[in-house]
Image (cartoon, rainbow, N blue to C red; front, side):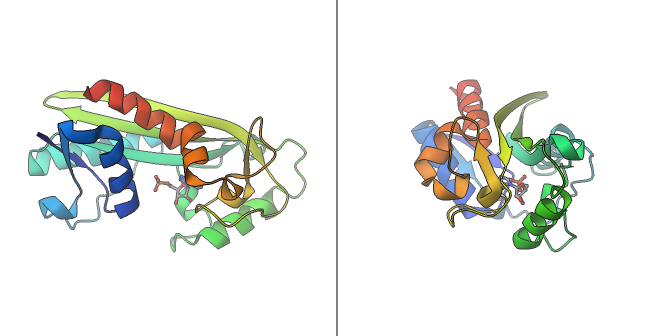
Length: 190
Ligand code: IMP
């Protein structure tokens, strides 16, 4: 089994990727390699932040690594909150406050189109590869559902009449930004 690091401490993301990649890889999280630093996410693009995290691990810890970054891009807001999605309402990373601010800023907007986009940077040896996954949809006017996290209660994927927060995780993963980006990562890692 080959070691590879996923630059996250999110136990849910680690478990999900271990299931997707199967037996060929020993997927390590940041804790597993003794990395307790807060890796700076200072880029102004998803690609930039994913690359910073993956390169950081390769350079400081020597492991091949992949890292992800996700944003919600809303057309009526010029692509915001985008790379700032986690801290849209401030540095506290408060999902309820982020969603409330989004709905407030969208009060007057007739164009509700938006997309989630996940970028994954994979660093192996000297090489870096970027893949992404996108799901198109729209921002609802009120919250619906209690599954999931983040902006799920206000994101309705195109072709559905329920939000991500009203779908079970298998149904969401089958069409989601992260599911699509992860499928591309798996192709790179076979
Ligand atoms: P991260 O890069 O995966 O940490 O995602 C950044 C932010 O985007 C999160 O803090 C959430 O606010 C939002 N986000 C990412 N993925 C999802 C999702 O699947 N549903 C809802 N919100 C998400």
